[in-house]
Length: 86
Image: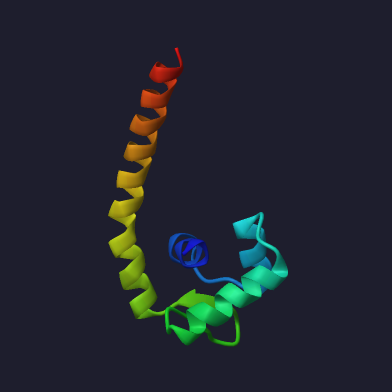
C-alpha cells in the first residue's frame, strides 16, 4: 500500500520519480507492486506516468484514518514498553 499511498499523497509520477519517492524500494519490487496494483485496478499508467485510479483514491481515503490510529497505537505501545523496561 506504500506505493498507492505515495501516489495519492504526492500525485502522479514516472517510475523513476516513484522509486525516488519510495526511497528504499528496489526497481524489481516496485515493478512487481505496480503490476499488482494495476491488475487490481488501483493504479494506472497513462503514458506520462503512474497515478491512482478512482478506486485507488477511494481506498487511500479509507486508509488515512487507519494510518492515524496506527500512529497513536504505536506511540502508546512504545511508551508502555519503555515503562516496563525501566
